[in-house]
Image 1 (cartoon, rainbow, N blue to C red):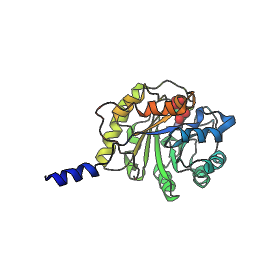
Image 2: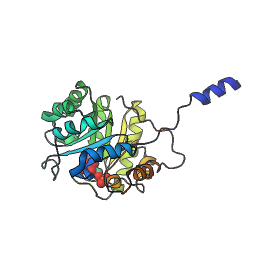
Image 3: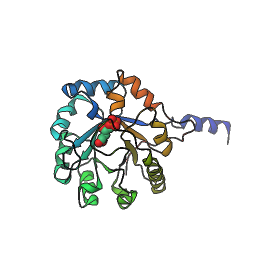
Image 4: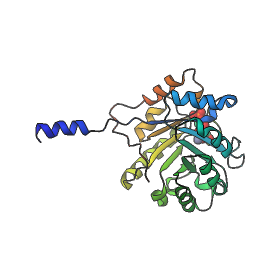
Length: 246
Ligand code: DX5
Ligand code: ZN
């Protein structure tokens, strides 16, 4: 290789991609949600994670599309909507119209995951599949072509502030291999108990997007909290691909 082409190669090498940080609004001050969203965006968050719970699929109730619509004009961050509702299908259009950019569903929340993901994509949104701690990888292997995001739950869904389940790390690593072998641009998210202390293990296993509620909104300084989670990349980690595209 000539010196010129070597220089060119160095110049066109993309910079190391950092992990995406998606603060979960569940841990925000609900009396000041607009201000919280603005604050976390200023603090460097990449996506805003919105946990929708119905008191049926999970033992807690949060909010619906009205809140997504109300917050939409106040941020440029992609709205990453995590549906913990069953059935999910009747509400997907409402969340899309409210301004959700990503809509993720649990395979257990409906009888036809393939059709649900087709529906999300047809609405022009990124589609996601969420795996509970007890849900095997097999539940999504046949729908990878319709999947933009895979979310591994490292707590049982329903509440913020729970302890991180280290038992899920092999699942994250197995999904990393599955995604790489598929050659698809699928973001691998991890949700639950993420802190600057737990982040290195999930990044090492191959996650590219970290969802963090308590560790961000529970901190006095959101920017310092986001920076410390993002900086938890283990030494020698290969470049992260955080683009989506199925
Ligand atoms: C749990 C939610 C998570 C949760 C994360 O059902 O899906 O997004 O809010 O909160 P922390 O980071 O506090 O575990
Ligand atoms: Zn969530």
